[in-house]
Image (cartoon, rainbow, N blue to C red; front, side):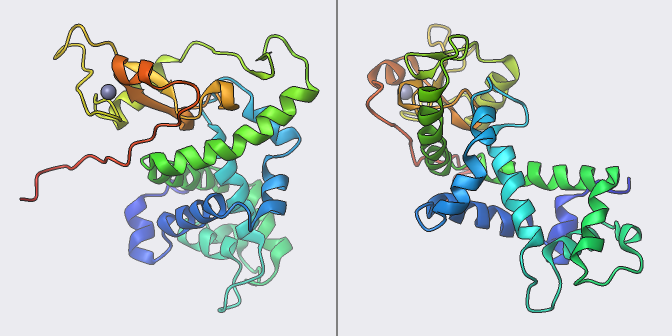
Amino acid sequence: MRGKLESHYYAANGFSPYYFAHVVYNVVGHSDAFLRRINDLLGDAATENLCRPFPRFSNLHAFIEDVLTELFFESPAENGAYAIYDFILHSRLEHLIAGVEKDDIEGLGRARDDPGYDDAFRNLIDEIFHILFRDLAFLQRFNDLTAGFIVDWAEGHDDDEVFSRGRLRRVTVPQYVKDAIYHRDQGECRSCRKAVDRIVSPVERERFDHIVPLAKGGANDISNMQLLCQGCNSAKSDGSELVSPLYHRAYPTT
Ligand SMILES: [Zn+2]
């Protein structure tokens, strides 16, 4: 279908979501160096969105969208093309920019009015999200970053339905979030790797834990959740920020 991208298509053509994932990773990892841009990306109206309970288009999706939008319209690469131009070509949407020069940023920008562009763009955002979603250390940094904005926002907005004592209220974790986190963490506690599969271990109930605790400004967002066992969950006080560097091997190499 036109406008629907496949990751192998990017890979084969050198337009890789990994490149953009790396940029987002760096912006978050070096937030001090990007402070003004971070303030633009996460401040004001964006902060209000960070406070929504578990949006499917998550806080991380929204951040990726904003970083990509900036990148697409940033001054051109060495070959003189704006990133949006390469994106349009590699999305097989060249009919949207027929007759438009690759350095005509206004002409290129008009492609954004087309639903095919929107599909392709959202698909790219989602691919980047899923690359970064596996990296819990990154997710912790991202949510640490948003926490500062959420705490500041709470100070100025006395909404009892959203906040309690200056922090986001605990809300029910939607089933789709539980399913996604359980799947990503493969039914194992991220800290001690104990199976929390209730079929294997009927007494062990899984805990869906906020990586950055609500008490520290953490968000009710899928990017801020991990699977813990009961023991590790109770050991993690609101003061600790436990993120395990463990990753899952698909098969033993030795
Ligand atoms: Zn555990």
